[in-house]
Image (cartoon, rainbow, N blue to C red; front, side, top):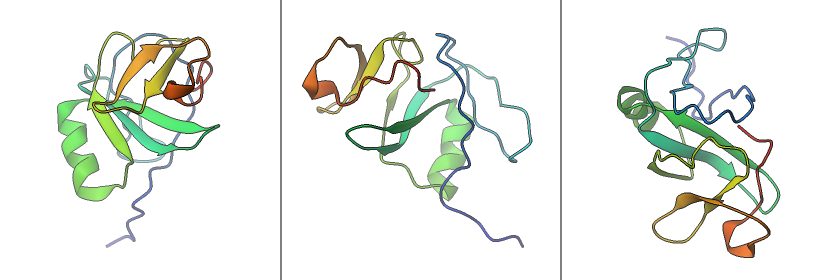
Length: 110
């Protein structure tokens, strides 16, 4: 049995507004592509965030095998350029200008 790494190998993709699952079961595999149900934060700091959109089935696999910081249901704002992760409860994506409560502005992040 191969060693399991609890941290995903992420591939940066530009925000396009498409709410599709980008989870890959192997590093070189194709993304799932099903409609996204969850927006997952793998890591978040004041200047960097690694985020992914995943479907319900892939979220189940993520919860069994991987480590993540936060998640919220995927909404229209998730995956759009000019949005950021609001770290208040409940977390969610919002349109940002320079709102410090949203953390970094991830205009060019996946």
